[in-house]
Length: 464
Image 1 (cartoon, rainbow, N blue to C red):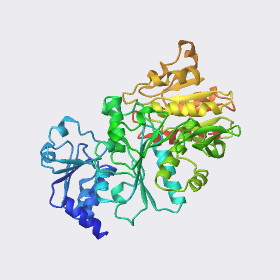
Image 2: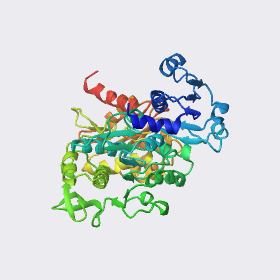
Image 3: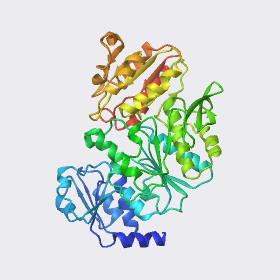
Image 4: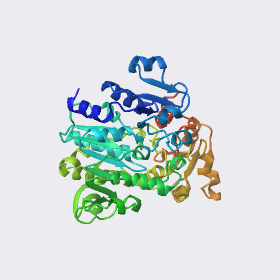
């Protein structure tokens, strides 16, 4: 065990009354971390059986476990409350019990207080996982020791005891940002902003303010010129700001421009590489590449080497993932598109690649209170046939013109959606699963939804 880290943990947390709220993946990582450092804690989860009490006792000895409801007396006595990101601390049973002197933090905040590893921090409504995975891939390809954590990969407190890394790349959700106070990222970005999680954050303004907090104390603030909501506001103005966007960039910034009759990634006036040379297609992926180059440059990484490694990055499962079939139809699994902005990016990024062929979209699920209206133009102008399903599927279908009613369908299952899409599609057409919704009304998560889609597509291919 790292003696310096252990001493720091002991100094900050020993003899404090610590309560962990939630015993999911993050909560368990917090419990393991504290237990490794011999720090006493209690865990409270409102679910009746997220973990077996016997398993908990076996792993964590005499530490306290309270299940089945929020224990206000336990929360009220906490000096340090470590909150899992899925838990809304504004819930009355929790907020009314927290004392004014209680230190309310998350696992990322604890990591930031204890680690001096340089941080590259990424948030945004869409593209986070792709961008941080690219950064992790590129950084390691360049010979750095790069860790990946936050909303992806191993929880950060499961990595903190490992050998020192050169960088840690953090994907940060709005839920995680709510409890971060001490982060001083080397480079930080808000990739974009669109309606998401408004069931918890209530307004887009509040959601945007939480996202903007990633710029607090960062050295390099990276923003998207195409989305003014990502520009650091007056609270986070930084002379070392850097931008990316889909237009011709100014000197020192990243963007896109025509060069030799092909669209290129650009640094100022310098053409870096053509979009055709890169494995992930669509303007939304071009912006992802540009954000990676901006963040990597800010971390001191070699630009030419980054571009070379990006040419071999193959993308993420369930994010505009091509399903290989022999029927000539382009089947695309974008199950990870759990909000309106992600689906809009997919439609607008992929539609120009069809060269006159049809786009058939499968969408719907649990919209989490989002406004679907930003999809209206894309659904009416770029989608030939719309197939909806799930809790909010018909709300998405209602955005289409009355004249498009014959080409708008609602079905009861993803398998039925695939079967219907197959009757509508010809070779050269694209069938895109990009739900604009969470999956929890019908599936365990977006991964299960994507797997069911893939299986439904391939079932026909195999002749079963």
